[in-house]
Image (tube, rainbow, N blue to C red; front, side):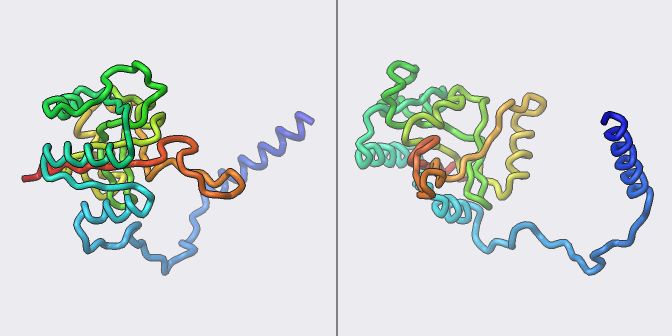
Length: 215
């Protein structure tokens, strides 16, 4: 049996070598390369909002820090949120001067109603949020609480995934985070009796609060 397997392997490798050595004409001479995405007529922020909300996300625009706090207060009142967790120093520095309540530590984390995190970039073409393990929020804060609130800046908007990776390279240089992923809308699955269920593997609601910083 071993001999037969070895012979079959040799035959296969020989065919591969022959195929690599042969120069074949292009089987599709009339094929023309086309862009992966259609040309957008709208601005990058409008495209992100369109795609993000189409995926089930909820978007709030903030023209400054006070507008951000006002939106957060309204959001917590509407959703009856009591326990909000924010572990990143930058987020804490943003919220603390206005007296907005949040938990800085992991105390009673199992009772978390919502989390507030930053992100790496907002990808307009597919309405996704790029996150990494480079900040104190890690992975748990964006997955465990039923409501995930992302505070992002307008300057973090990019068109495509390749642009977001270039943005990461420019920001971190040789110290690229070991975990990079994208979030597209709230957690969902149709594995349960083929019915769409939200929040099965992560947050049931996903918000992006976009803070304008391009003035």
